[in-house]
Length: 153
Image (tube, rainbow, N blue to C red; front, side, top):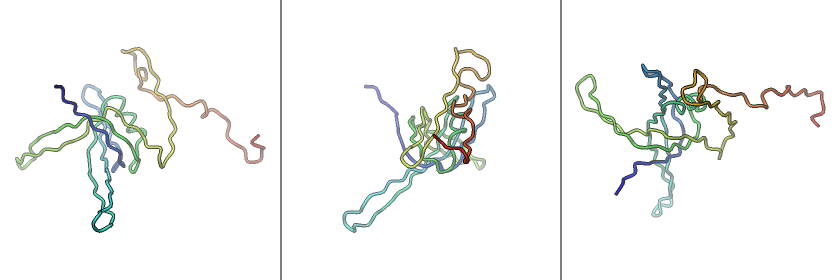
């Protein structure tokens, strides 16, 4: 029997993604995610709420796109896997945490709009800004500015 470690959560970014690069040049971004759960207590008829906080880690092109697209407060849906990390702090105490390693991130369009810009793509092994490294301006960006003195139609 194969076990699957998949998770999908929707919440608000609690901080801007921090984009870094490993010594080998691999992009990695981290940000926080707050997930709210709200329900009505059937005994008291009062609304109750619980917030869970997660750290999200993104790699490669997803890391770069996340850093470019997500701001604090942005509502996103993160799909990925849970990963537990352990370490010792400076006092020698053992620490651990569970984080989400993202496979994909989507911006929620329920309370916001988004402009989609596709990354340029090329064959594997391409140079810089090839293989998804650069951003392509949308065709609408080249349109002349609207002049309020002119008729729009």
